[in-house]
Length: 292
Length: 270
Image (cartoon, rainbow over all chains, first blue to last red; front, side, top):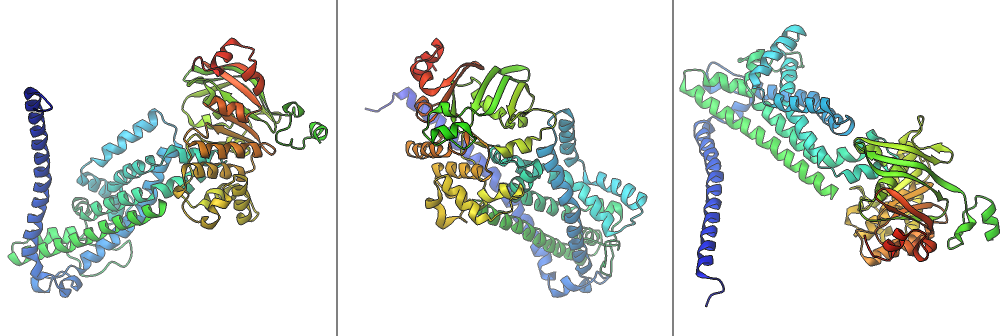
């Protein structure tokens, strides 16, 4: 004697099987993307790993692959990250704060919101053209680090604004009302409660946006970052190169050795990316614990 | 003693007859509140007296919370709200042209339905608001005094720098009251402050309100009619946005003038 009828049992079995299939399909999709990444990393490592040594990190590029290194590109990339962060974080976070906390909801606000979302989807080469026209030519900043950083900031600002707005929106309204009810102004509320509470989310968004920026090549090519730099930039007005540019340059050469150098460059770039993402996770965990 | 307090503005002692004090803390003149043109509160006129507890009762959606929020301009944060009529606070209209809502909220505090401590330490929950409002005394003293007033000091004095979020719901709500008291408001508005709490925490807070009324004017919205009858000196009954009856609590509960009030307080609807 069973608890349910034969017909119900069949039905239940069929539904359970469906659910099981779907679970397996989802798992397959997830793991195949991980697998793809693993294959890619493996391939790059096989090609480039033997080239990575202290000499590779500390040498300028060279015509001779065994003497070539990534020093100027690495330093250029760090310069870029620093400048982009200085430019884009204050602007991005302030914009998000304005849109969420100060601006009256309405048509204009909606219009800005839609536009920012659209800007996040604009191809990076378009930002490169914009940077070339505005920063390099119009403001006559030349092919400098500053031009590059400003262009890249434009590129990642929409991402930072969207991520910051999301983070700010997760702060419960009750906290704001609590602050207002004690005679706080909007600014005092935003500064003392909304920003600290949304800080982990904002930081995560910012660092992910920055790591997108350091991987971008197209805008830098457009504004004319150099591909062969045998010196280190000493200020924001110096010309520069960056890791993706250096990798691009090596890849486009005919010799096999340079292709392997490119792979080595990719490994270094990936390590920098991973370090940045790890920092994001570390900051988030640390501040989240403090808040709870 | 009771003769004296009736004359001057000295605070009345708790438990004293309500008639002794007649000074108005807030005076509502034909107040209507509209959300996008739809009235939620219709032409309410009444007086809230100093050093008394006034309860606002009524079925859900009757506009009592809306009315309460308008008393310290918390409705300003809701989109498309219009307020008609006048709310006089020491001879000035709260919605008058030159009135800064920030100043209004500094002087008329509020405690919300759900405890909403800041995700900071207990100490900073209390010290923050006076700090930004230019308080120059000792923070330690202020924190201790406020927590004592809210009957929370003994429970938290050894962990003032712990996160407020580690407190129980009832403790959090008393912390929110302490936080409001630290600003030394003239009026304390409470929007169903006990609805998220268990009976023991509720009775703590009710005892507390009884003690606070000698120094503050308290206006409390409650769903709990026993609570209204236990703690308040005056009771306002609202329905469908209208003020149906307003009077001394005893009167409203035992001998209401309006039939509808009687039906509500005896539990025949709502």
